[in-house]
Image (cartoon, rainbow, N blue to C red):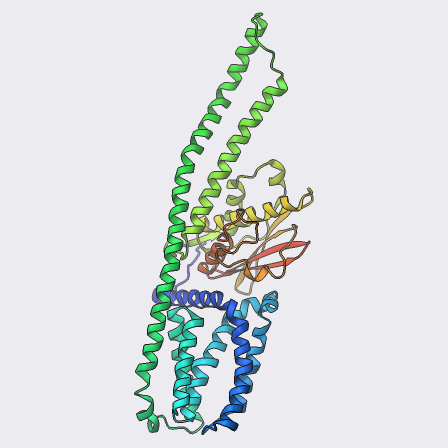
Length: 450
């Protein structure tokens, strides 16, 4: 049996990943402004149509183009509600890309061409360029949107009978100005992004220092506990011999001796748990991109088994809550280490919320779903308190946490999404308040997965 890895050209694959990350980042940063952008579009288009037809008539106006602009902006008014639905969550990035490209570069360049780049439209196009720089944020996505919008506007202009060559004397002198506005604005945005990255780097450095400082005393505590466990039976045996010999020693009950053993076991378990949490924190905080050069064909069943074996459960009862329903195993192209840490994040969150809910009936179910349609799925469901609908759309945002202050960092689920996207798949969350929370991880199939 031979498992083949994807043969996508390296340069194209890296560009595709970079564009996808750029679009996703732009959508995340812009989500807070989506409703305001929709309001501006819905109010602005009718208002300016009235202005340019009644008060300051222009050479060309289109009620149809403006009506379509208003129509496609309406769903954005309800972005927070729509993102509760699985379909919208999957399509929001493409929707945002389309609406910004249409509303700004395409619409304003096309209308400027139809009005022979009259002064008011030349200035309006400049304003559209600056607005796009502000709301899109990522320089690469700004350039892609501007280029696609401009090409589409010129193509439509030619299709409706326009002649670009006839306007070259008006258009060409403006092009360097527009390009300068986009590049300069992108440069300032890039500086802002660098500041954000420096902050993240500082956080990573602080986490690394903290982990190093904590590991040394933890190692000492764990070594001491293991030493006590090794010598405690001999100490207790000597104590019993002294008591039998009539020496004046205080009696120690067998129950107390067992409790001392239990305390040492607890110390070992807690130090192991803390070390794993430190590992998770280091991995989560240090990864904003994933190095895919070490990826290989991996089986999801081995990843789940490794995660359950290595995760430091607090008790046997906590481990019994997790049910790994081993179904049809499947392979994916990725990293077992990253997948195990992804499962650590899900386990940590689920166990925390199950404990917060109280009771002993809460469980975690993990199962696979193998499909012949080119993608396989891994399901992770807990019967905890669920996630509030207003919180659900934001759980994959970096540094956003639904846990109480001090309980969560807001990087675990963002890291999980980054990992799944690097595998060529995705991760989604469904939740019913008071009933369950389910994460569904989708993996692209590899050839000859037997």
